[in-house]
Structure formats: structure tokens, C-alpha cells
Amino acid sequence: MNGYNEPKAVVENFIREKSLKQKVLLMGKDMGVREYGVTAFPTSFLIDPQGKVVERFLGFDGPKTEEKVRNLLARQTTESATKKE
Image (cartoon, rainbow, N blue to C red):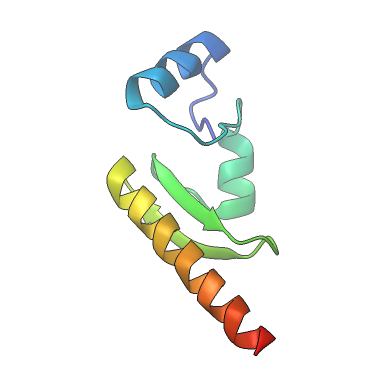
């Protein structure tokens, strides 16, 4: 979510520079503050398939974010397999 309401071209350049793979919402400052209580940028949220926020952290650290996503996916896979047994 672009919390600075910058033009699309600026956001696209940032996405390229940081090699981001996730989707980025444009013009999201008001929604970020209102819906998620964002007070600092960047703030990242990991949201599970049911729409529940499972992780929130401040700062930009692509590798750390990727590691958290991998861990959550692994945990989800393990929990799903356990439920089937």
C-alpha cells in the first residue's frame, strides 16, 4: 500500500528498485491509517487466506519478509496435513 499517495510512475519505479513481487495499492494513505492503524512507513502486513492479519512489522527488509512468508506457508502446510490425518 503506497502510504504517501505518490503517482503511479513513482511507485512503479520503487517496485523495480526494490524488486518487489507483491501487489502494491496506490493512494492508500487514508486507508492505511484508518483501517490498519499505520503510523510509520513502511509497515508490512502478512494476511492469511481467511483475511486475518498474522504478522505486522515496521521497516523494509525484503529478505526478512520473504523468510516470514516462507515460514508461515510451511506452518500452514504442516497444519493442513495434520488436519487431514
